[in-house]
Image 1 (spheres, rainbow, N blue to C red):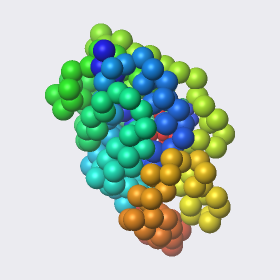
Image 2 (spheres, rainbow, N blue to C red):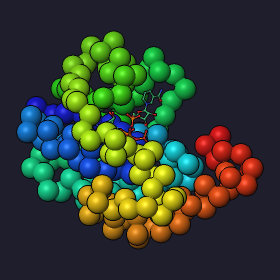
Image 3 (cartoon, helix red, strand yellow):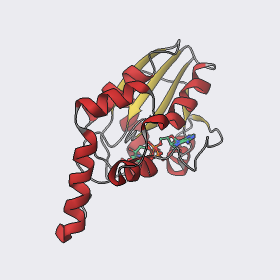
Length: 176
Ligand SMILES: Nc1ncnc2c1ncn2[C@@H]1O[C@H](COP(=O)(O)OP(=O)(O)OP(=O)(O)O)[C@@H](O)[C@H]1O
Ligand SMILES: NC(=O)c1ccc[n+]([C@@H]2O[C@H](COP(=O)(O)O)[C@@H](O)[C@H]2O)c1
């Protein structure tokens, strides 16, 4: 059986790792979708698709299932998003997500969806991690070691701080 799990992974953290660990026990192969692949250098999406491909590929090496990492750009039309995803990925039997919109779109398209309880959500949240990087607080223990390496390689903390400074200087949120 082949499973599909999509996220923005900005960055890939231990909550995502926990979910992959659970999925790995249920599937033979895993397709990991890098969502919002066209977005980067914004507050909500600081890392490029390529940088996230590196984070995710290295972070899941420890698990057994063969894993295919596929960047997927957003579309303006939710109603055809599942077809868009399917057009970019190997065929899969079941989708894993805790995102209510993603769950609804897959269910409406007749794809089986499995959800799991959030894991240590008080700290394991992308928004919280990006905030910690901006404020100079500890974040390294909340992500796989491979993700720390990639963020160092691309000087990611400096990038996130620069983006936050630009926003604070009144140049408008860089997400727009
Ligand atoms: N701590 C967690 N435990 C279990 N699932 C999680 C956890 N954090 C995120 N997920 C799920 O992983 C998928 C991808 O999440 P996403 O990349 O948006 O991370 P996020 O932590 O919610 O980030 P952000 O705060 O940037 O929106 C979603 O289905 C999300 O619900
Ligand atoms: N219409 C669309 O393009 C559409 C619809 C639903 C989800 N998505 C994407 O799927 C990903 C879902 O991941 P998250 O659970 O991390 O939000 C995001 O990148 C989101 O933008 C896109």
